[in-house]
Length: 229
Image (cartoon, rainbow, N blue to C red; front, side, top):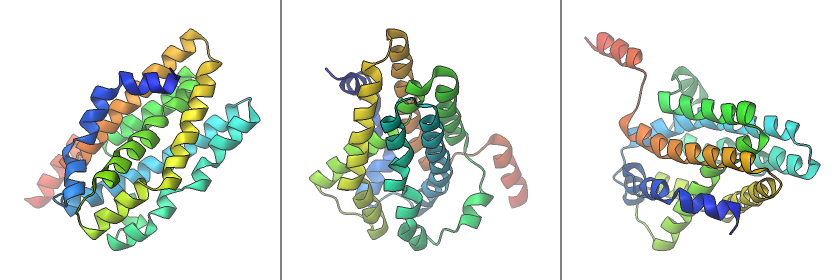
């Protein structure tokens, strides 16, 4: 069994929670609030900036030039911030508004963990920490497309982007790269990779929950209440 297949099997219970979480069910049937959708895009913009930065930082440390080239250029092949610009327009979401909103606690923790995996656990763990983002989106949205759905036009645009063949192709490249790294790794490094994959999988679940709950820092919540009085 491939290393990535083992990881998928080990984390299935978490992934099933992702696939059935309120954000995704609401996105699919059109009941998701537009505020939650806008919140997702604001936080996802911040996440993607760090996500792409990590691709480049990890690539610089890789000894294998082909692997480094692949990782370094994956974000050029499919830059979500650029590709999703029509949805930003539909939501009337500007970069100024995005910059004015603090990164949410769960998003901050997820981003921080990915940097930790790279800087402290190593290149292999750093790479695999990126994989659940690619893979959960690919599997989840391709399944939604196969089953069929009826939702708001802007939600439909998002689902079609995430379920597209191009996005799926990038996911497969990441899986192949992960298996290559695992095949050459020591048992100790493979265990670090397992943990990095598990943590990112669990953060993916918490991330979707965060968007429904409109998660904010405690002091920011208190400030908002004072201003409302």
